[in-house]
Image 1 (cartoon, helix red, strand yellow):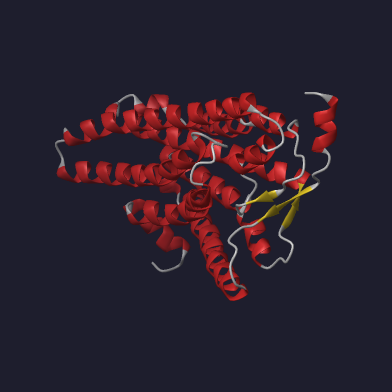
Image 2: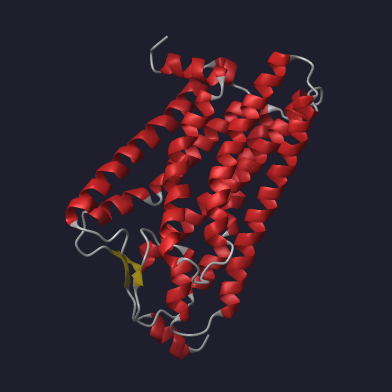
Length: 313
């Protein structure tokens, strides 16, 4: 990049996050709704973590992964929702350049980690149902913890290159982001208004697509084999239990990946700009809110453990 482009990039020191522009009364209503959703999301995922921690019957790989997934969801909503809530009450709705890039990095790293966790959870169910005799030997607690560490480390390494590339882009003046967070697409669109950046768009799009489609098709392939094995289970009770567990996992997968694919397969392409913030809202705010309900309502062991945690047994 030329020195001129680097000098231009210094002209933007902050961005304006438009969020959901509307009358003050509607802004306050949205703030109240999302604040309640945020608190319920934290409480729901913390309840699952506490249930797994306190109920020794749940000290198995499947529930250890679920507890870590709930912790991930708490981190995920904290990467964007607090700032969104503050913006509802703010007059300026600004965010500094450094904070914007930091939010982008954590938001996408946690999203990458979620893709990896969903893949590992699919692998766990594949082993448990398709190879039940080998499952205790393969999926040990030690191996499970290694998979958890892999998800967190690799998740935070995957998106380093796109973020570094974005820090080198020239932002020459336009600084209004029509979203409630510093998202990849809007940032690339602002930079491309200054100079053509086909290489950066291609790299970001390729890395996003590679991660999304690789993990998605692996998950779908795993659960296809799982469901085929479930159909062959002779016991009706065993078949019902296995199907219940897998259906809850698949519900979370389709909720998350459905909205993610609409947003990040072609970042910066300008497609359906008005809709992007709503798809982002769905998987970043609503999916973590629904996950505890999906996992607890479809799982008897988890329901029993949650009753103990909530003191209603």
